[in-house]
Image (cartoon, rainbow, N blue to C red):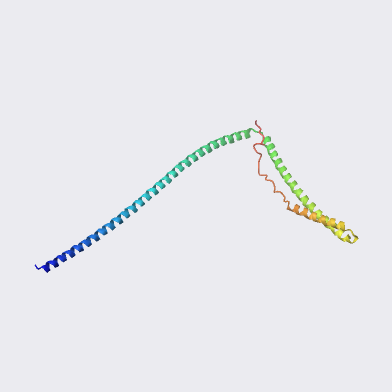
Length: 210
């Protein structure tokens, strides 16, 4: 084999070695990039796992709190129901006792209680009617005072030619005062009718048996 042929062969071998070396470098670079991507994936996945764990812990805590609150409310409701049952039993005993007392109480006693209640209602109605009547009288008096002042003012104006100016001035002041009094009387409203839908309170109710 000639020297030139050997040199060409060596050159080919060197070119192949260079290509293989470049391919090897590319493979190493790709492996490094894959390793970095895999590390990033692991890191991201670990963060997601940690977030999922934290979220699960929070949800578990909230669920536990709800369970405890439900138990607390259930216990409170049971206590209230027990209390209500006790009061209902006491109320039923009182009702039976009242029925027993009503059964042995003379009818005249109930009639006296009814008359007492009616007298109280009649007194309220009379008081209301008196208040309304007083307001109406004040309004009527105000209207009468206004009419009287207007009449006196008209007479004073008619006699003004006779030099009775002081009387006209007094009449004018009187009509102004009457109008002011009438305005105040009109503002006064009648009270509403009394509420008669009531019975004798336990404090005022008389007892036949003591």
